[in-house]
Image (cartoon, rainbow, N blue to C red; front, side, top):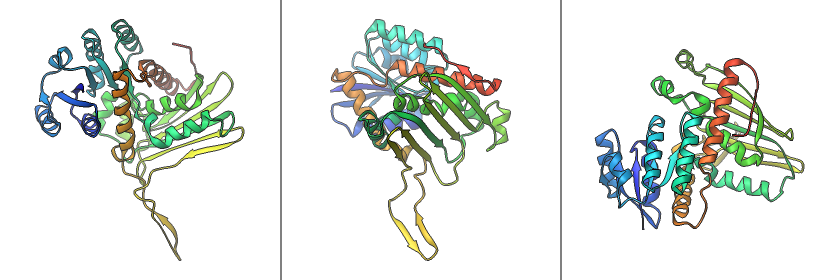
Length: 331
C-alpha cells in the first residue's frame, strides 16, 4: 500500500484526497495545512493524521508527497522531498522561476525520485482520446490547434495579485495542452491581453482576456484564447485541424438532454467549473501517479513539462507587455 502525505488541504488538496480514497493501492496517511481547521477536516474525512509540513517530508511512513500548497512554497518542499527520497506530485506551476525549476530538476535527478507535474487536463478522457486519434493519423498531419479556455468568473483580486498573472496561472494549462497535442516544440510566440472583465485586475497589473499565437519550426500554428468570464459556464474546447480532417472536443454540459419546441432547440448549460468538468481527469491523474511510484509507468507529465510550460508562460507575459513576438529557445 502506497503511503501518501498531502501538503495543502484547500480546494485542490481535497480533490486529490477524494480521488485517492476512491482508488486501490494507496492511502493518505498524513496531511498538513496552514489553516488547522482545514487540515483537521480533511484528515477526518480520509482517516489521516495531521502533521506539519516538515514532519511529513521527513517521515519514514510516507512514501510520496502531493504538493498542493501555494506556489511560493513549492521550491522548498520539492527540495526537501527530494532530499528525503520521496516521490513527488506537484501542482502547476512548479515554481514561478524557471531557474528554480531547473534547480529542482537537478535535485530530483540526483535523488532519483519520480516527479509528476499536475497538468490534469492531459488525463481528461475526451482530450486523451483526441490525442490518441492524432497519433493514429486519423486527420493526417496536424496543421492548426485551437484551444479555448474560459472561466465562469474571475477570482478575487487578492488572488490575482499573487498568482503570477493569467499566463502563468490560467493559460499555463493550455500551454501544456498545446505541447501535448502538437507533438513539436514551439519556436515563436505572440501574446495580447486586456482587462475587460474587471478593471481592478488591470490595476493589479494583470489581464483577464488574452490570446496567444504559437508557431513551430515547421510552421504549424496553435492559437489559445482565455477569458476570466463566461456567462454560460466553464468553457473548455479544443479543435485540431489536419491535412485529412478535423478533430474536436466540445464542452461538457450538465446533461446530454436536448429539448425541441417551436421556439427552437435548447440544451443544458456547460458544467459550472473545473471541479465538475475535470473530476474524471483528477481521478485518472492520481491513478497514474500511483502507477508511477509503483514503477509500472514513467512520470508523464514530468518536471520537464512543468519547465517548458513555464517558459511559454514567461514568454507570453513578456510578449504582452512589450507588444512584440518572442523567439523561443530550447531550455
